[in-house]
Amino acid sequence: MTRSYDIPIISRGRIIAPGDDAITFSGRAGAVFRAPDPNKHIQDLVMGETGRLADLQALPVREIVDFLAELGQRLAFARNVHMQEAFELSLAAGGLTEPILRAIYEGIPHMFLRAHLAEMVEKTVGSEYLDGWVPQGTGARARFRVRAVGTRQLHITAGNVPVVGAITIIRTALTKSDCLIKLPSNDPLSANAIARTMIEMDANHPVTKHVAVAYWKGGDAAIESQICRTSRIDKITAWGGMASVKHIQKYLSPGLDLIALNPKLSISVVGREALENGDAMQEAAMGVALAALHLGAGRARAEDKVDHAVGVDHLVKVGDPVRAGDALCRIHAKSSGAAKEAAAMLLKAIAVGGERREPARVVDEIIGA
Image 1: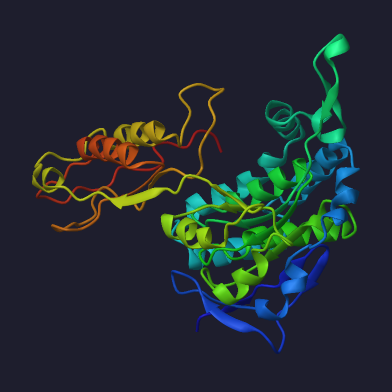
Image 2 (image 1 turned 60 degrees about the horizontal axis):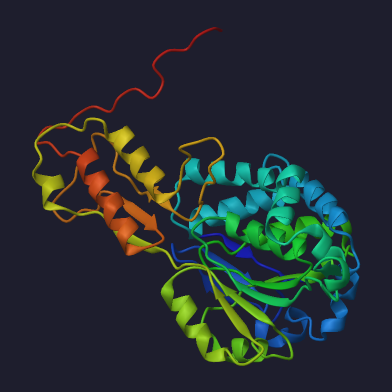
């Protein structure tokens, strides 16, 4: 029997559990979960008056970094039951395999390292602009001042990797903004788990008081038309595919801006060359690694950044039977050009032969007791 998960609404320091008004939803891979009816909780989802951001605006950036750094320690997968439940549901609802997904969850705390957070602030906005008014010009020309001010944000997140929720919470906190996160159906609990951990740390902390998380079916005009108003939201950030970006555009108006974060292109590699090549699989691992590196999913140098939204998954294994028309893998890319280039590299790396070949051993030798 399929387990049903409860997805509460997180409303700025409060947890609203599914009750009599709960609605049952299904994830893309068949997982089942319940959530409160968002139509009955519009006032819990939006912040409303911009003056309510004053507590977060007054908080020094260094204290926000302190809070996030402690949060990262509490997100350790082995000790955080909320993250463990999110992993379990993401495994059932999403498309990633267990080893890949587990590694991603175990890596989330590293996103909250103090040095990384401080560097992010200084290389993007600058703490002095976030904490106060900064004079522009020099000497007698310094006649005006500039300050970065947080906004009220709606984030429509993608669920291809669980790090999206963590990125959203980090960036909105560091820019002293209020955010409402709309959860995706293939990862409906990760951001929720992080927000619940924040509540357990300090439900009244200004960062916690400016995070709301909820699930509703994407494209639900009855809900989104109530949320996407200039009296309630300043910015909409849309992650994910083209459909999620297009449908939200109808709510845009002066004072309500859209930030689209590069919809990815996912394709399956199916080619005549791959199915007619009689050579055994050779150099496949290196070929796949180079294709992933080309997409941005790896590092050529230690200082390079890794893009967790791109890569290769659902890759066939050595010895797997395939027939004409079967997908050999799936590519996640930021553009059609990058996807085609990675596909060409993968087709050179993957060979299909007429005889079954035994997989190579994963562990070649164990050294020591």
